[in-house]
Figure (cartoon, rainbow, N blue to C red):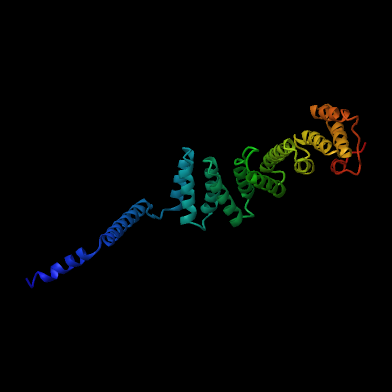
Length: 290
Protein backbone atom coordinates (compact mmCIF):
# COMPACT_ATOMS: atom_id res chain seq x y z
CA UNK A 1 0.00 0.00 0.00
CA UNK A 2 2.83 2.42 0.76
CA UNK A 3 4.25 1.85 -2.68
CA UNK A 4 0.88 2.53 -4.31
CA UNK A 5 0.08 5.77 -2.47
CA UNK A 6 2.17 8.12 -4.55
CA UNK A 7 0.68 6.75 -7.78
CA UNK A 8 -2.87 7.28 -6.52
CA UNK A 9 -2.37 10.94 -5.57
CA UNK A 10 -2.49 12.42 -9.09
CA UNK A 11 -5.64 10.46 -9.83
CA UNK A 12 -7.32 11.88 -6.74
CA UNK A 13 -6.40 15.42 -7.78
CA UNK A 14 -7.72 14.85 -11.30
CA UNK A 15 -11.04 13.51 -10.04
CA UNK A 16 -11.39 16.45 -7.65
CA UNK A 17 -11.65 18.89 -10.57
CA UNK A 18 -15.13 20.12 -11.33
CA UNK A 19 -16.56 19.31 -14.78
CA UNK A 20 -16.08 22.85 -16.23
CA UNK A 21 -12.46 22.85 -15.07
CA UNK A 22 -11.88 19.47 -16.63
CA UNK A 23 -13.32 20.76 -19.89
CA UNK A 24 -10.92 23.73 -19.87
CA UNK A 25 -7.97 21.43 -19.30
CA UNK A 26 -8.98 19.17 -22.17
CA UNK A 27 -9.60 22.07 -24.56
CA UNK A 28 -6.24 23.61 -23.69
CA UNK A 29 -4.51 20.31 -24.33
CA UNK A 30 -6.32 19.93 -27.64
CA UNK A 31 -5.35 23.44 -28.75
CA UNK A 32 -1.75 22.87 -27.76
CA UNK A 33 -1.61 19.74 -29.88
CA UNK A 34 -3.31 21.52 -32.77
CA UNK A 35 -0.90 24.46 -32.68
CA UNK A 36 2.04 22.10 -32.61
CA UNK A 37 0.67 20.23 -35.62
CA UNK A 38 0.11 23.52 -37.48
CA UNK A 39 3.65 24.61 -36.71
CA UNK A 40 4.94 21.34 -38.12
CA UNK A 41 2.80 21.77 -41.25
CA UNK A 42 4.02 25.34 -41.77
CA UNK A 43 7.59 24.22 -41.36
CA UNK A 44 7.00 21.49 -43.92
CA UNK A 45 5.56 24.00 -46.40
CA UNK A 46 8.51 26.39 -46.16
CA UNK A 47 10.97 25.65 -48.95
CA UNK A 48 14.37 24.73 -47.70
CA UNK A 49 16.90 27.43 -48.39
CA UNK A 50 19.44 26.06 -50.79
CA UNK A 51 22.11 28.42 -52.01
CA UNK A 52 22.73 28.01 -55.71
CA UNK A 53 24.98 29.68 -58.28
CA UNK A 54 23.40 32.81 -59.70
CA UNK A 55 23.63 31.49 -63.26
CA UNK A 56 21.69 28.40 -62.27
CA UNK A 57 18.84 30.34 -60.65
CA UNK A 58 18.61 32.86 -63.48
CA UNK A 59 18.69 30.08 -66.07
CA UNK A 60 15.87 28.24 -64.31
CA UNK A 61 13.82 31.44 -64.22
CA UNK A 62 14.39 32.01 -67.93
CA UNK A 63 13.27 28.47 -68.78
CA UNK A 64 10.07 28.96 -66.77
CA UNK A 65 9.49 32.24 -68.57
CA UNK A 66 9.89 30.52 -71.93
CA UNK A 67 7.19 28.07 -70.84
CA UNK A 68 4.96 31.03 -69.84
CA UNK A 69 4.97 29.92 -66.21
CA UNK A 70 5.09 33.52 -65.12
CA UNK A 71 4.51 33.21 -61.38
CA UNK A 72 7.12 30.48 -60.98
CA UNK A 73 9.54 32.45 -63.13
CA UNK A 74 8.97 35.61 -61.10
CA UNK A 75 9.73 33.77 -57.89
CA UNK A 76 12.97 32.44 -59.32
CA UNK A 77 13.97 35.93 -60.45
CA UNK A 78 13.18 37.11 -56.92
CA UNK A 79 15.43 34.34 -55.65
CA UNK A 80 18.29 35.69 -57.75
CA UNK A 81 18.05 39.00 -55.92
CA UNK A 82 17.60 37.31 -52.55
CA UNK A 83 20.66 35.08 -52.84
CA UNK A 84 22.90 37.39 -54.89
CA UNK A 85 21.69 40.94 -54.17
CA UNK A 86 24.82 42.76 -55.31
CA UNK A 87 25.38 40.98 -58.59
CA UNK A 88 24.72 42.27 -62.09
CA UNK A 89 22.24 39.44 -62.41
CA UNK A 90 20.19 40.81 -59.53
CA UNK A 91 19.61 44.10 -61.33
CA UNK A 92 18.29 42.29 -64.38
CA UNK A 93 16.28 39.90 -62.23
CA UNK A 94 14.29 42.68 -60.56
CA UNK A 95 13.12 43.95 -63.92
CA UNK A 96 12.36 40.46 -65.18
CA UNK A 97 10.40 39.75 -62.01
CA UNK A 98 8.27 42.85 -62.64
CA UNK A 99 7.66 41.75 -66.22
CA UNK A 100 6.64 38.23 -65.16
CA UNK A 101 4.23 39.50 -62.53
CA UNK A 102 2.73 41.85 -65.12
CA UNK A 103 2.27 38.98 -67.55
CA UNK A 104 0.54 36.99 -64.80
CA UNK A 105 -1.81 39.93 -64.06
CA UNK A 106 -0.24 40.29 -60.62
CA UNK A 107 -0.11 44.04 -61.01
CA UNK A 108 0.63 45.06 -57.42
CA UNK A 109 3.64 42.74 -57.35
CA UNK A 110 4.78 44.08 -60.73
CA UNK A 111 4.56 47.65 -59.44
CA UNK A 112 6.48 46.76 -56.28
CA UNK A 113 9.32 45.22 -58.30
CA UNK A 114 9.39 48.14 -60.75
CA UNK A 115 9.52 50.63 -57.89
CA UNK A 116 12.38 48.68 -56.34
CA UNK A 117 14.35 48.82 -59.59
CA UNK A 118 13.70 52.57 -59.93
CA UNK A 119 14.78 53.15 -56.34
CA UNK A 120 17.97 51.11 -56.62
CA UNK A 121 18.96 51.95 -60.21
CA UNK A 122 17.41 55.30 -61.19
CA UNK A 123 20.09 56.10 -63.74
CA UNK A 124 20.21 52.70 -65.39
CA UNK A 125 19.56 52.46 -69.12
CA UNK A 126 16.59 50.18 -68.39
CA UNK A 127 14.94 52.67 -66.02
CA UNK A 128 12.46 53.84 -68.72
CA UNK A 129 11.22 50.27 -69.02
CA UNK A 130 10.76 50.04 -65.26
CA UNK A 131 8.67 53.22 -65.33
CA UNK A 132 6.72 51.75 -68.24
CA UNK A 133 5.99 48.49 -66.40
CA UNK A 134 4.73 50.44 -63.42
CA UNK A 135 2.54 52.68 -65.57
CA UNK A 136 0.96 49.91 -67.62
CA UNK A 137 0.38 47.81 -64.49
CA UNK A 138 -1.70 50.68 -63.13
CA UNK A 139 -3.32 51.24 -66.52
CA UNK A 140 -4.47 47.63 -66.70
CA UNK A 141 -6.36 48.10 -63.43
CA UNK A 142 -8.63 50.86 -64.75
CA UNK A 143 -12.24 49.97 -64.03
CA UNK A 144 -15.53 51.14 -65.53
CA UNK A 145 -16.72 54.67 -64.80
CA UNK A 146 -19.31 53.44 -62.32
CA UNK A 147 -16.59 52.52 -59.83
CA UNK A 148 -13.87 54.36 -57.91
CA UNK A 149 -11.22 55.82 -60.20
CA UNK A 150 -8.26 56.02 -57.82
CA UNK A 151 -6.21 53.56 -59.89
CA UNK A 152 -7.10 55.53 -63.03
CA UNK A 153 -5.72 58.72 -61.50
CA UNK A 154 -2.57 56.90 -60.38
CA UNK A 155 -2.18 55.46 -63.89
CA UNK A 156 -2.43 58.92 -65.45
CA UNK A 157 0.19 60.28 -63.06
CA UNK A 158 2.56 57.40 -63.85
CA UNK A 159 2.01 57.71 -67.61
CA UNK A 160 2.62 61.46 -67.55
CA UNK A 161 5.71 60.95 -65.40
CA UNK A 162 7.09 58.52 -67.95
CA UNK A 163 6.48 60.85 -70.92
CA UNK A 164 8.10 63.78 -69.10
CA UNK A 165 11.16 61.86 -67.94
CA UNK A 166 11.87 59.94 -71.13
CA UNK A 167 10.42 61.86 -74.10
CA UNK A 168 11.12 60.44 -77.52
CA UNK A 169 11.40 56.84 -76.33
CA UNK A 170 9.06 54.12 -77.62
CA UNK A 171 7.78 53.76 -74.06
CA UNK A 172 6.88 57.45 -73.91
CA UNK A 173 5.01 57.32 -77.21
CA UNK A 174 2.90 54.41 -76.06
CA UNK A 175 2.41 56.06 -72.67
CA UNK A 176 1.12 59.22 -74.37
CA UNK A 177 -1.55 57.25 -76.20
CA UNK A 178 -2.57 55.51 -73.00
CA UNK A 179 -2.59 58.82 -71.13
CA UNK A 180 -5.04 60.25 -73.66
CA UNK A 181 -7.33 57.27 -73.17
CA UNK A 182 -6.98 57.59 -69.41
CA UNK A 183 -7.99 61.25 -69.48
CA UNK A 184 -11.00 60.34 -71.58
CA UNK A 185 -11.93 57.73 -68.99
CA UNK A 186 -11.64 60.20 -66.13
CA UNK A 187 -13.74 62.68 -68.07
CA UNK A 188 -16.31 59.94 -68.58
CA UNK A 189 -16.48 59.46 -64.82
CA UNK A 190 -17.15 63.16 -64.30
CA UNK A 191 -19.86 63.08 -66.96
CA UNK A 192 -21.49 60.03 -65.40
CA UNK A 193 -21.74 61.73 -62.01
CA UNK A 194 -22.78 65.02 -63.58
CA UNK A 195 -25.65 63.40 -65.48
CA UNK A 196 -26.82 61.79 -62.24
CA UNK A 197 -26.96 65.15 -60.48
CA UNK A 198 -28.69 66.71 -63.47
CA UNK A 199 -31.42 64.07 -63.40
CA UNK A 200 -31.88 64.65 -59.67
CA UNK A 201 -32.24 68.39 -60.16
CA UNK A 202 -29.00 69.11 -58.27
CA UNK A 203 -27.85 71.62 -60.84
CA UNK A 204 -24.95 73.25 -59.02
CA UNK A 205 -23.39 69.85 -58.31
CA UNK A 206 -23.92 68.88 -61.95
CA UNK A 207 -22.33 72.12 -63.21
CA UNK A 208 -19.26 71.50 -61.06
CA UNK A 209 -18.75 68.08 -62.68
CA UNK A 210 -19.20 69.40 -66.21
CA UNK A 211 -16.89 72.29 -65.42
CA UNK A 212 -14.17 69.81 -64.44
CA UNK A 213 -14.48 68.22 -67.88
CA UNK A 214 -14.16 71.62 -69.59
CA UNK A 215 -11.20 72.78 -67.54
CA UNK A 216 -9.23 69.55 -67.10
CA UNK A 217 -10.27 67.28 -69.97
CA UNK A 218 -11.10 69.71 -72.75
CA UNK A 219 -9.39 67.61 -75.43
CA UNK A 220 -11.42 64.48 -74.68
CA UNK A 221 -14.44 63.15 -76.53
CA UNK A 222 -16.75 64.29 -73.70
CA UNK A 223 -16.25 68.03 -74.11
CA UNK A 224 -19.13 68.65 -76.53
CA UNK A 225 -21.62 66.87 -74.32
CA UNK A 226 -20.33 68.72 -71.26
CA UNK A 227 -21.11 72.05 -72.95
CA UNK A 228 -24.59 70.87 -73.87
CA UNK A 229 -25.24 69.67 -70.32
CA UNK A 230 -24.05 73.04 -69.03
CA UNK A 231 -26.62 74.70 -71.26
CA UNK A 232 -29.30 72.47 -69.73
CA UNK A 233 -28.21 73.07 -66.14
CA UNK A 234 -27.86 76.84 -66.48
CA UNK A 235 -31.24 77.11 -68.20
CA UNK A 236 -32.81 75.12 -65.37
CA UNK A 237 -31.34 77.61 -62.89
CA UNK A 238 -32.43 80.60 -65.00
CA UNK A 239 -28.83 81.70 -65.59
CA UNK A 240 -29.41 82.39 -69.25
CA UNK A 241 -26.17 84.26 -70.02
CA UNK A 242 -24.07 81.24 -69.05
CA UNK A 243 -26.41 78.92 -70.94
CA UNK A 244 -26.07 81.10 -74.05
CA UNK A 245 -22.29 81.18 -73.68
CA UNK A 246 -22.07 77.39 -73.34
CA UNK A 247 -24.14 76.99 -76.49
CA UNK A 248 -22.10 79.61 -78.38
CA UNK A 249 -18.79 77.96 -77.49
CA UNK A 250 -20.27 74.60 -78.39
CA UNK A 251 -21.43 75.89 -81.77
CA UNK A 252 -18.03 77.40 -82.53
CA UNK A 253 -16.04 74.28 -81.67
CA UNK A 254 -18.53 71.56 -82.63
CA UNK A 255 -20.87 73.24 -85.14
CA UNK A 256 -22.26 70.09 -86.76
CA UNK A 257 -22.67 68.04 -83.61
CA UNK A 258 -25.91 66.69 -82.22
CA UNK A 259 -25.03 68.32 -78.91
CA UNK A 260 -25.04 71.78 -80.50
CA UNK A 261 -28.39 71.11 -82.16
CA UNK A 262 -29.84 70.13 -78.78
CA UNK A 263 -28.46 73.26 -77.11
CA UNK A 264 -29.71 75.50 -79.89
CA UNK A 265 -33.20 73.98 -79.69
CA UNK A 266 -33.26 74.38 -75.91
CA UNK A 267 -32.46 78.09 -76.16
CA UNK A 268 -34.90 78.86 -78.96
CA UNK A 269 -37.75 77.42 -76.90
CA UNK A 270 -37.19 80.36 -74.55
CA UNK A 271 -36.68 82.85 -77.42
CA UNK A 272 -32.94 82.90 -76.82
CA UNK A 273 -29.95 82.29 -79.08
CA UNK A 274 -26.33 81.29 -78.51
CA UNK A 275 -24.37 84.36 -77.45
CA UNK A 276 -20.95 84.62 -75.88
CA UNK A 277 -20.30 86.39 -72.62
CA UNK A 278 -16.55 86.98 -72.76
CA UNK A 279 -16.42 87.34 -69.00
CA UNK A 280 -17.78 83.83 -68.52
CA UNK A 281 -15.50 81.12 -67.18
CA UNK A 282 -16.58 79.00 -70.16
CA UNK A 283 -15.34 81.54 -72.67
CA UNK A 284 -12.08 82.00 -70.77
CA UNK A 285 -11.53 78.24 -70.60
CA UNK A 286 -11.69 77.97 -74.37
CA UNK A 287 -10.09 81.36 -75.12
CA UNK A 288 -12.55 81.62 -77.97
CA UNK A 289 -12.67 84.81 -80.04
CA UNK A 290 -15.92 85.49 -81.88
